[in-house]
Length: 219
Image 1 (cartoon, helix red, strand yellow):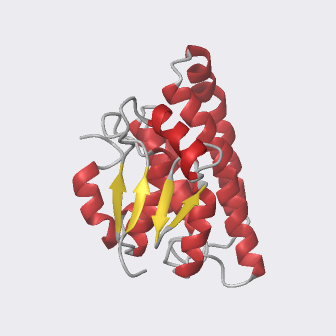
Image 2 (image 1 turned 120 degrees about the vertical axis):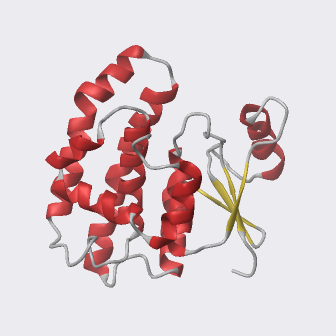
């Protein structure tokens, strides 16, 4: 990559969370990929700019963010973006079996992330209550079970370097804690998720990011 890629996503700094774009930015940070964050600039925000993207530019056919711009290409759908850059940075599996286990964990976070978004931003008390009281246990127990299928040989699934799936898990846990959905102490019930989360945010490459955004548990 000859120049920094650009990451188009909402500015969620007022909420203290990252969302789907946050997963991508954390992956970039962990892999040392130079990038620049850009935000919807049209008056009226993304709803207005989305119309332009759909009708004129054909950048995001479904109107989804994030979008990553690399060398004139518009990359869409955040898991496809993660896999694309994972292959470029050797942050995928080393064979078909590892690819499968990496993907199975990553795919499990897509629905988890979607339910978190609904409960956090739609201002629907029933969805928020259901997420906190039912879905948190469902997703944490499920992902923990998937992680148990791999014998950890380091801090992450396949060694001491995170795969894109490890990043997706760590980013989701970060947002759950920041949104006051769970307390960090809850992770003691899910030791492999806890290990993934703590190992990821202990990476030296995340030091600068943490200084700017703060740890999951607000001090």
